[in-house]
Image 1: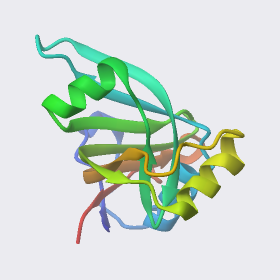
Image 2: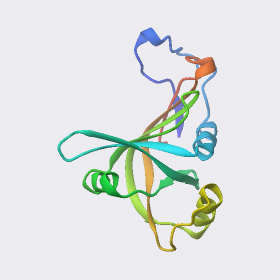
Image 3: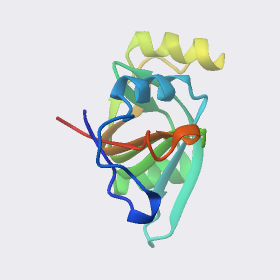
Image 4: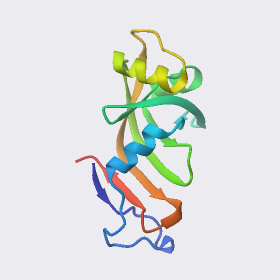
Length: 150
């Protein structure tokens, strides 16, 4: 992922300088450390739907399992926003998802994190970000960073 500055309103005071921008590694570390992830999808009638899910970062990607309304929404329209639970060290992913069979190493990591092991052969959603945002509240707007795939 390549880093740049977000294009927020000028009133936020985001610098044009690269000084203080965060690395993608920093964002992945925060994603991996988060216990819960907020996932926002859209219902068939256009209403938004946001709920927390459990997930694991595996090979630099956020994987999560879900059912119910979120599953139905993602099967119909794979676009979503997913973000960490922290407002102090923020990571926001905007993009799409695809379903994949959960690899054994991810099952182990999930069990270690949540004391629950998904069944072998389970399918999880993998977030494929088109854009990501990250910042630290303590030094915002200096740390405000946007990431795009290379």
